[in-house]
Image (cartoon, rainbow, N blue to C red):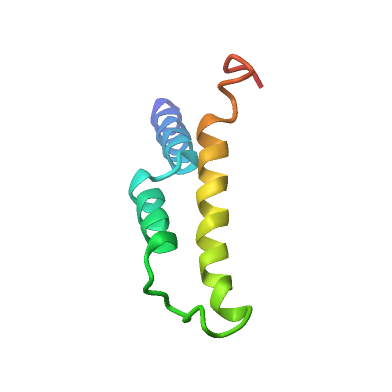
Length: 76
């Protein structure tokens, strides 16, 4: 029974870590947005902006999940 509780605590800890934004990915997303090099060139109308938009959405979501609870004093 104690072994099962240890496993549950490990799974809970992994889940908590997975919810934290990855700073390396956030920095890479910012560099990708600023960089003139793209997977899909911006010269292609609409499609060229989609990859930048995806990186921007990820970056905004990460910042909100990181700092979103700080205004409420950490309470949900």
